[in-house]
Figure 1 (cartoon, rainbow, N blue to C red):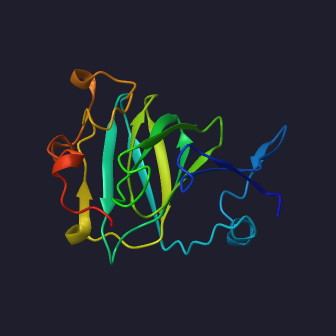
Figure 2: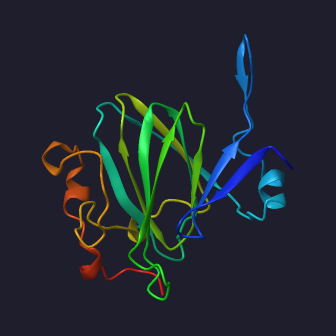
Length: 187
C-alpha cells in the first residue's frame, strides 16, 4: 500500500482519494487507480466502465445524477484538465445524513479524486474553461434507471460557484425534480 491517500469527508461514505504522483524534469507518473491499493485501504469496488467529459465553458453544471438498482453505480471521479466543484448528495432515506451533501474541489493540479458510493446523487460545476473529467463506475449506464435531482434545489443548500442565471445546463438537468418530489430514491 502507500500509493494512495484516503481522506474522510463530512459524510463518512464519501471519500477523497489522492494517488501518489512521481515527478521529475520530464513530467510525472501516477497510478490513478490500482485495485490492490484500494482494497488494502478498505475500498472494495469492481469498476466496469470509464466515462470522459469535456465542458468547454466554465460554469457548466452536470448533474445531479444517479442510477437506481439494479444499475446503481459507485463512481470514482477525477479531473484530467481544469477544475470542478464536485458534489455528492446523500439520497438514502434511512441515512442520518439524508439530504446533506459533500462538495470538494477536484483539479488537475490537486490530483484528488472523489469516491461517490451508491445511494448518492452526483454532479459538478466546472471552475475553468475546457475542463475534462473522467470517472469510473461499478455498473453500466441504463437509461431506464437514470434519475436526477434539481441542481439548485434550495433544500439541498449547495453553494454552487456560479449564479443560477449564468449556469450552463442541459435541458434535462434544468427539469429534474427537487429532493422532496423525487420518487426514485434509496431506502
